[in-house]
Image (cartoon, rainbow over all chains, first blue to last red; front, top):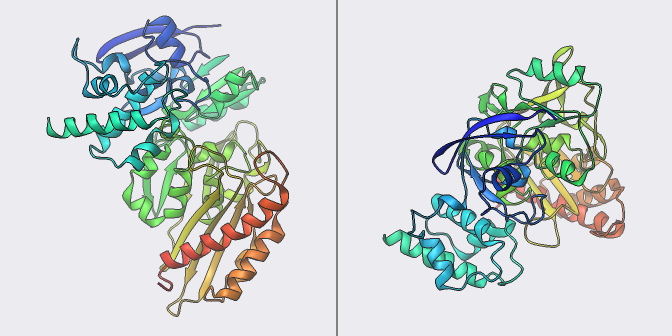
Amino acid sequence: MKTIQVATTINGDATEFVCAPDESLLDVLRNRLGLTGAKEGCGTGDCGACTVTLDGRMVCSCLVLGAEVEGSTITTIEGMSTGDALHPLQQAFIDHAALQCGICTPGILVAAKALLDRNPDPTDTELRYWLAGNLCRCTGYDKIIAAVQDAAAKMRTA
Amino acid sequence: MQYAKPKTATEAARLLGAETGVTRVLAGGTDVMVQLKAGMVEPALIVDIKGIPGIRSITPEAGGFRIGAAVSGLELGDHAALCAMFPGVTEAAQLIGSKQVQGRCSMVGNLCNGSPAADAVPALFAANAVVRIEGPNGSRDAAVETIPTAPGRTSLAKGEIITSVLLPAPVPHSADAYLRFIPRTEMDIAVASAGVSLTIDASGTITAARVALGAVAPTVMLVDACAAAIIGTKLDAAAQAALEQAASAACKPIDDKRGTIEFRTKVAGVLARRAALIAYERAGGRK
């Protein structure tokens, strides 16, 4: 299969990679670029564990071809902290014990940040609908909602 | 598999027409990528249409809007003027999948995937949408309801792609609405659905209507009998009952794990009635 050369920007860094035509962006991130924060849960866009942002909109990276992202800007969970300083959402997830096994956590953090970028003060209902595409089989979600709301409050006063 | 990203619709149509193996058109990819992953299809060629000019644009046209084939649900929802003019269509499109899927999924993809349960499609039928098709013999326009022919099948010929959908200008005192039933609150596929668009006169009498039902037949269907049941009425109780009855009478659903024939037939009628009431109120009718 003929490989395709792709130039993109990932977490602010110009990044080039080569991929197969049928290779997903998720596989490119994990297997070719070593960015293993995005996880494969279902591989069919149902679970949200592979959530990244593509040109400012959040997407399931398992439903994007690597070849499609030529010239695009991507952010992943690896781009969320500033050096060793955690993002307020990341810190809030630790403070509220909003994770157990952690597989869903990178996707939920990326999705929660995407919401707060659009709406800094969401209601619990808005937050739950926004995160409907991020499945967590451990927490029962309540701690996740509490953590995001705590981070949102801190970010509003920061 | 080959991946191509042509710069024009003509080139996309040429590539798709010339390929002898299985092809797929890639817009948002939320159905195509799932088919690839599941091994349902092994295309020889994928044509990514997102390099075609205008394919991701929402453009005012003759009082309505032309929506490119790769415009995502999120982009529709962020367009205030479009949402104000076509609340039914834009709400329907935004019911598809999760917010992540909304970042990519397109109404034209929803149409061409050919599911009878596609949320955007009954609303597009009701809104009298017209699709623009590019193919080996040039471009043509077609009424949206001529596109789906069977589950997973469309009337598009080899090499033809839909490049945009036109929502024609509504006449004054018109509005649309879409409702679906799912057993959850989010992230599910319609068990039954209804899209309604209607126009009223100064007295509140309905002068024109289009009613489409989803998930209750092999394709989404436009039901003329439903429109006939409410045209000339003020959507009083008798007209509502006639609409509900006409909708249920048109249903030819299947039994499956998501809903029985009996349930779908009943619920399609209820949804048609409720969607009509919403559209009536939006058009400026009572309340």
